[in-house]
Structures are given as C-alpha cells and as structure tokens.
Image (cartoon, rainbow, N blue to C red; front, side, top):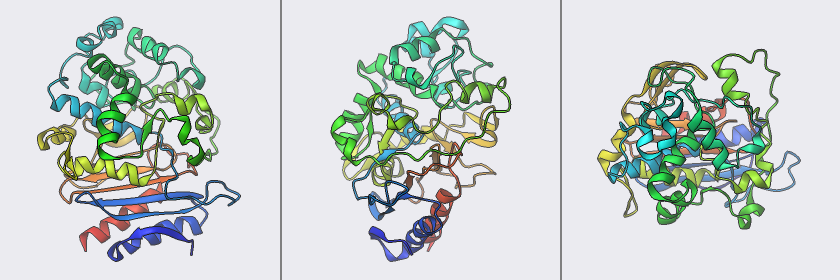
Amino acid sequence: MAEISGVCEERFSGVRDALAANLDKGLDIGASVAVFVDGVPVVDIWGGHLDDQGATPWQRDTITNVWSITKTMTALCTLMLADRGELEFSAPVARYWPEFAAGGKSGVEVRHLLGHTAGLSGWAEPITSDDLPDWDKMTSLLAAQEPWWEPGTQSGYHALTQGFLIGEVIRRITGVSLGAFFASEVAGPLGGDFHIGLPATEDDRVAPMIPPNLPEPTETSSIAARTLLNPRMTGAEPWKESWRRAEIPAANGHGNARSVALIQSVVAGGGELSGVRLLSAKGCEAIFEEQANGTDLVLGPGFRLGMGYGLSSEMIPIGPHACFWGGWGGSIVLVDLDTRLAVAYVMNRMASGLVGDSRGADILFATAIAAAS
C-alpha cells in the first residue's frame, strides 16, 4: 500500500485507504485529503510525488493549482460583502460596474454571475490563454459583450469568465483586487495557505500539474464549445510564471486539501471558524438560494446551482444542507452545514473532467460513511 503521511482519526481510516488505493492503482501521482469537523482537522493526509517519475515526494506544505475550486473562494468573498450590506445579489451588476450595462446587459444581476446564468460563459472575441493574466482586457471584453442567451433563464458554466465578472464587481466595491481582498479578509485571518495570485516566494513548493490527454474537438459552434475552446486550455498553463502571478479567480488558486477544507469550514460552521467570524449564519444560507436546476448549457444535465456553489440534486445527492464544487482534473470540496463538515481532495494528475471524477467521489463516499458512524 502507498505510504500516506499526516494524521487521520481511526474512524476515518477509510478515507486514508481511499487515497492509498488511488495512488496504488496509478490513478494519482500525488495528492492530499483533509476533513474538518467543527473546524477541527480529523483527517490531514498526503501521499505520492510531485512528478510521474517519483523523484520528489509530496510534502505537508505542497500546494498546487486547484482550478475551479478557486470559485468557492471567490464566492465566499461575495457572500461576505453581501452579509456586510455592501453588495446585493438581486442588484444589477451595472450598479457597481457601470460599463457592464453595454450590450443589453443592464438587467443582469449579481446573482446571475454566481449562478452561471448571466449568458457570458465565454468570450466572443478570440483570445488565448496568454491573454488571461490581462485583467483589464478580459473584463473590458466581457463588459462590452452581448449575452449568448437570456440572462437568468438557464445556466451555462462560466468556466473562466465567472472569476473576472465577480472579481471586477468586488474590485469596484472594495477598491482592491479579488486576490488582495481574499488574502487580507479571508486567508489572512484564518491562516489559510491559499493564494489567488501566487507570490514568487512560494514557487518552490508547487506541485506541477500533469495535464490530461484531451480529445480533438468534434464541433465548435455550440455554447459549450464556444465556452471551452476560447481559449483552448491544455492543463499545462500553471507551468507558466505569468499564470501563477496573475489573478484568475475562477481557475488559478493555489492551495492544498488542508487549506481548502480549512477555509470552507467557515461555511460549515455557519460563518465562524476558531473564533474568527467572517459572515453570519444567515449569510451562509444565501448559498442555498437556487439559481438554476436542470440541463446546463456547458456541463450538461443534472446540475443544480446555488449562489456560487453546486447544490444537492438527483444526480449529485449530497444532502439538503450541503454544497460543493470540483476543479478541472479531479479536485473537489464539499461542505455540509448540518454535520459541520468540510472535506477536500487536491491532486496534480489531471483527468479530463471539469468538475471531479471517481477519485474524489471515493474520498467523499469514505468520508460520508465515517461521519455517519
């Protein structure tokens, strides 16, 4: 069995076994798993290597790009501002960002950004991944663009655009970038080792992503194709220094399972963690205001979306008071307010799925069994 380091309470041994099995089967190269209950780590484990040659072990403080898990951190910032009365979910985006009203978007509300229903799941103008670090260019293009469908009527996963859209609203309200707000108002107070815009001083402990094998696209005209192929990502983008330094609040957060679970434990705890309160219990409940339910124009059927998080559905039955999101390649986080539990799985070998795969599902299943015992 693969060597697993860290701490794991005995009743959660199945979680440790699931991580070891992923490594033994060669499904993972390196990964970390954390489970927090009532803000206390009952599982904080890691194993494997940073490279597929097995030369460098995954360490306690190893971090990696977690792709769309970053969206949950961006959503948390938005929840905090709403709880403080500085932002209204039902307000037009143009109230905070006047230029956004162009292209017939004066009626697009902040909640549409959080629920992926704004009709701006991709850029109409051709771009490359090298454009993504250019904040002003990315947000200006979105401000000028017309929606691809009637906002608020249906979801279409805003895979990259969501972070720029929400981040610009936050910047207009606070006067600082999303990454700076997150660092000072969330990660700093909680002691969370998570970064949206990675300092150069942290590069030495980053586990490089191992990209998936992606098929050649068979069509390019659907909303899903227009969303996911412009720019066409390979998974190797985090190797670039420009990517790590940028703030791409839907996709380039760097952390590990410990930091993800720790920060999202604020939600599990009704807005408070270890004496640090970031928002009220009522503020957390906004997550569960359904924004979309059914077939997503990008992800397909079965997704039920709340305010910045995925919610329990027939296809994804995680519980009535639980929320989740997954990152491209396999990482996942789940938060359950009833059991006050947060679980995260972060890895560096990417599968092709956008929002998780069987490796993370096995971790979640083992966690659920242990939590119910």
